[in-house]
Amino acid sequence: MSDSLLNPTPQFGTAEYIGSPGGDHCRYCHQPISGTYYRINDGMTCPACADTARRELARDTHATYIRALLFGIGAAIAGLILYATFAIVTGIVIGYVSLAVGWMIGKAMIKGSNGVGGRRYQITAVLLTYAAVSMAAVPIWIHYANQHQQQRAQQQHLQDEQRQLESGSSQQASPEPSKPRLSLGPWLARVTLLGLASPLVEVWEGGPSFGWMIGLVILFVGMRFAWRLTAGLPLQIYGPFQSMPQTGS
Image 1 (cartoon, rainbow, N blue to C red):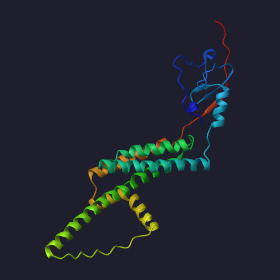
Image 2 (cartoon, rainbow, N blue to C red):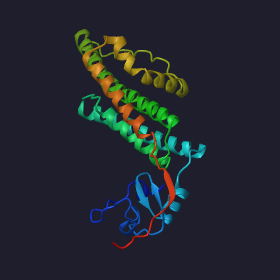
Image 3 (cartoon, rainbow, N blue to C red):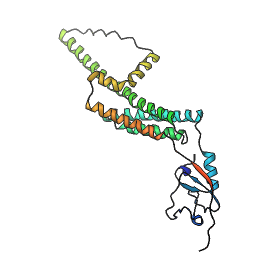
Image 4 (tube, rainbow, N blue to C red):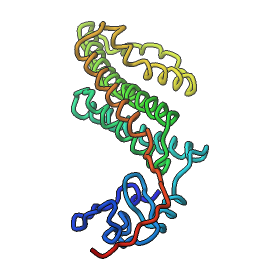
């Protein structure tokens, strides 16, 4: 759908008077209107612009929804990266990024659908927002787990060297047997479930806190952003109407 039809350029130099057809102009192409005219929402328009709007009026089809879904998934991945990167770089896990994630997903889906919205778009946008924000905990956990593992390895190495010096033996300590690793499929499934449940994991481990409740409220607001943005862009065309010719005073 053409952006000019959804967001027409305001005419600051020309007033639009209903009922004075001699001075009426199309809200979209700004050409004078005489004779037949239409209305798109609240704006007077010429027959040509009304026909263009009618032809470009997007319809809710399966292909439209799939395109919006793909745009939304792309925005969710970008939002996940944004959330995790901010937390890792700054060391601050702040819920306000959820607002940006919800806005990104809602805007991307309505862009992919060419302005079409509705209940299934809204539900999808909300789920994608929750998934992006909750799954952002996974790379954050992996980052801090790697840091913790490196610190433990360094401490263990120092302890082993100290024991060797105290015993006077040059024999190296035997390495601990490695734990069996999960294959990629089960690992991804476990990580995904853990990430989606991350808001509940914090409560399970430490109980509800004020920070957790604030983060949950902000997440809800971000999901609300996505819900409202994917409601759709209304475009209603009325007419045709016939303007009355001006009569001399």
